[in-house]
Length: 175
Image (cartoon, rainbow, N blue to C red; front, side, top):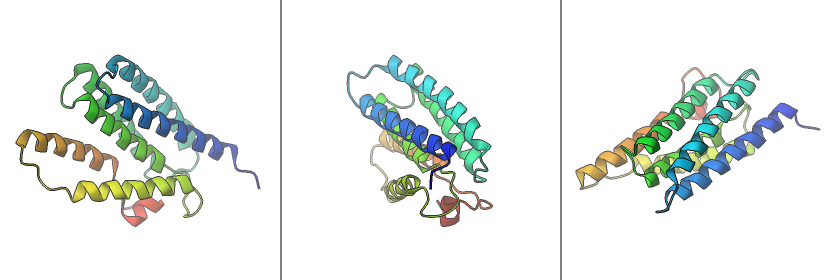
């Protein structure tokens, strides 16, 4: 049985976004990271992700899908602004944010049943591990470090949410 071409397109594009974001997350953790290249990458990603969202939203997506995509887009924009202004977070922390975005793009699925979109289910499991780490962290002694950590955690929580009226696997499971 052949897969629907739109589902194949969705899976391939999603994987490209995830891989590119993880790669840039690693690059930004290096001392010699080119911030202007990162900004250009994020701008292109924002445009491509928005086109992707528009193409797949019409495919009877889950109730939460448009909002999750919108929050991902806003988080990409925030990361771009942070790199441009070099405020709030250092490049390595922006790299962490890109990895958060990658995990949540990887969780996006057109499927409403378990066992269909195995990649999204895998990424969902990985996100749950990361979520456990965020929720179990102890307060840091240095107030400045704690403030930065809390801001990163707020970004994670903004991306990692459920809607009560959604029937997708993530919302039904509670994250």
